[in-house]
Image (cartoon, one colour):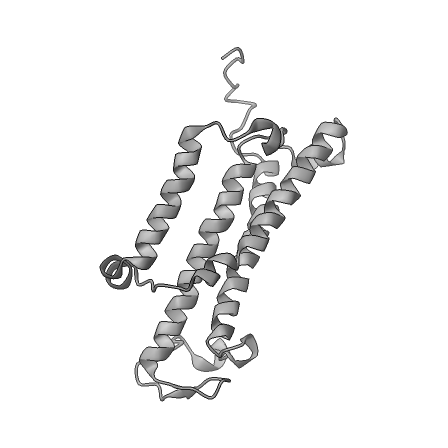
Length: 196
């Protein structure tokens, strides 16, 4: 409350540094996490990345309604409905992955210089937000009439929730190191380029 209001002409809410940090640093890690999870789930069900169809040869539809049964690399013959179910489970895992890496994003954006260890998790609204986000995801994924009929999600195995955890750790450690460098080298390259 001791700080003066921002100057609307010189102090922008969105800066190049913020866009660079959000989209070209953390955003890239989050996108990689989503794609990695998607491909892991497809491989789990017998469709490794090199066996997925080339979209230029398939056309606009990944799974046309009149498609013939397909054999995956495990030797299972899958009908169109089975293929669609696997695709939807992979897409649901992508959705879950975005939620998990957003947990890290929320925690790292809590402060701009201080470590989360120094700051702590005393903000009960933030803690409630993390809990609420997770609860909504669980409802969307595991409630049949909501997930299957409205949002077209499918229940996924618990292990699929664990796929993005290494990316969560990478985002968190990356930002903690970045903040440490800002605190220890005042006015250094990291502060000039990434302090938003």
